[in-house]
Length: 323
Image 1: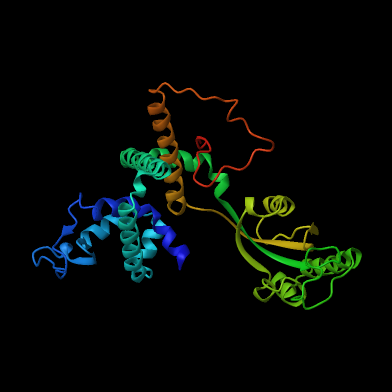
Image 2: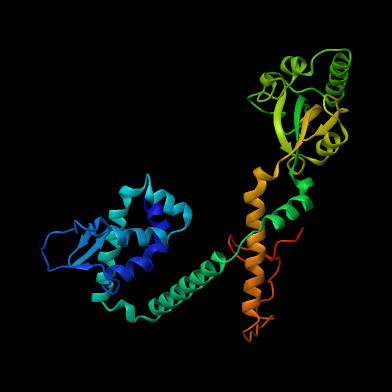
């Protein structure tokens, strides 16, 4: 369970403020029983460590300080883990105070960095509260990126070849073929379909794709950007019910049938577009604020050493492009 407790690190500062006595967390004489105010259920004491009483209201503040995923977990199925975390943190922090560990340079530095981070997050949230994504901008972005939301529903027939990625698959029902034999078989199947056979029935009988074959080769709707280029290009050229030429892929040789084409409606992608707009506006506002400060960076000191490593998750990577 230790890894779960580490997810609560974002609530340390909030708990320290509450449990340290400066925020109004209930203080009672040693040995007294936890009490709650009948007039305000939020003052119900949920955790008590010596003189410090943490109320339901205090706990809500702590939970709000967590990242969304952690907040959802500890507000639901992980709620029973909170007492152990709160008690352990309070006991150890009190031990640290007794030993005056807060006077150590590395501890002071860590507290200072945490404070800066908390303040920066608070400022960012305040800015985000005032950022809107107007309908006209959402519509404009949708029209500018409409191609990205085009999807195609496909059926496939796969014949595995000896050189394919799946040639040694233990789940395969038939041994792989040579490329020449696989091509010959697909040409025969394509002729059957051209002569009136149903693509779905042919796929059920002959496709080596064990996942889609039972569904008549149907792989559902896919975005053009999520399939390999030869398949995307063939699907883009074809109209519904048309059949592709034989396409070599890493999995063998394949035939595709276009079943349906569609563009995701604005209502379906609106949250994604609004997030892009808000992120772009946030970055603009941050740049505006940053321009008010005199900033000097030693670029030589921060020059990449060797191959540039990918930015860590959450690090700034630039402003989203406009439509």
